[in-house]
Image (cartoon, rainbow, N blue to C red):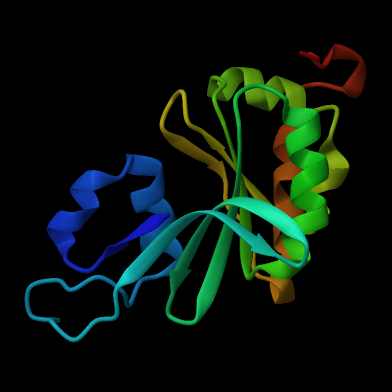
Length: 159
């Protein structure tokens, strides 16, 4: 199941965080006034790739963006995202927790930053960490400084 976003007004159908991902990774997609020849963006749910079920996939400009959807289990989401990351140009975890809760929890999982996986708070409708392409995975480690500033592993919250 899925749908295709072809025109600017089609973006009204999706939450703001999906619009942000499309804007960041699919800048030459979606027909805007004056640019009618742009390629559409497809969003598909529950697709299989490499033997894994992927909760959502965005296809645009020859790129694939995988999304692991979770309600609250960040540890499981991180494990699944790391396993599936290699199959996509970009990969995100979208979890239904507040940004502040996610940031506190991430202090215990800083090693995941080297995988270039992005994090989204669906509860707050916000992209917290952007995913980086396979050729720029080291860029994602920039967030380590922020997590270090917030405190050490001993102060982290586990849910």
